[in-house]
Image 1 (cartoon, rainbow, N blue to C red):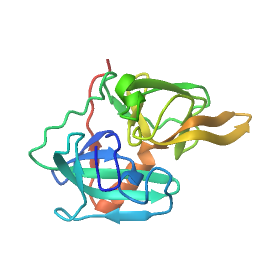
Image 2 (cartoon, rainbow, N blue to C red; image 1 turned 90 degrees about the vertical axis):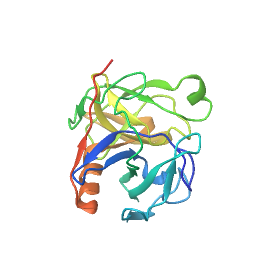
Image 3 (cartoon, rainbow, N blue to C red; image 1 turned 90 degrees about the horizontal axis):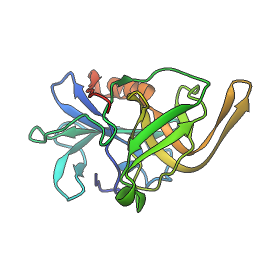
Image 4 (spheres, one colour; image 1 turned 180 degrees about the vertical axis):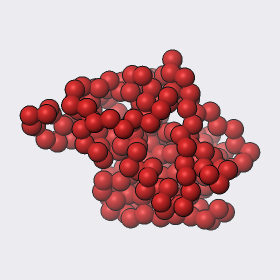
Amino acid sequence: MRSEVGQCTLAFLFRGSDGRNYMATAGHCILGDGPFASGAGERTWRPGSGPPAEDGDGRRIGEFAYAILLEPYDFALIRLDPSVAADPALCHFGGPTRLYTERATSPTLLHWFGQGLLLGQTIPARSAVAPTTRDPDHVYAVGAALPGDSGSGVITADGAAIGVLVTVGVHTGTIGTDGVDAGTIGITRLAPQLARAEQALAIRLALRTAPAR
């Protein structure tokens, strides 16, 4: 996906109570100055006024309807044009089967399909392990990701939508009696981001699901 800020990967598909389809990605894909930006705030755009979003070949797919880049939130929604056909299934892995809301202290296997530089051309389907999912806002995982993977939809091994990949690099979390919260990938959890977007847009958003493979 291309925007006026840069190139990112698309995540999950939602059906709005307004009858429109919405595609998720990272907030920094439209707000701020790229993947290392922060504190750019929160925006909504009325139909017909949002920044355009294009596919990898430069074809318009819709316009941004909502975006937030304000710790711990990094999330955006593209209001797809009515003529754009969209499949909710994650490439290679299938899913999402449901929304993940658990907060586990044991390791969790994660999957995503990213379009990051170099890796996106050779190994787009990748996996990582999250030592814990206990934090309500983020998940840190150990795996390989690069710029361009931002916005990727991340699922668990059984296809549950856990969040959106937003940062790469060393993430030093905490070490306690309930496990280690650290990794090389930062994932913003989907449930709180979705709740805030629904409030801002004044609509309900239903995750469109697909069978896991």
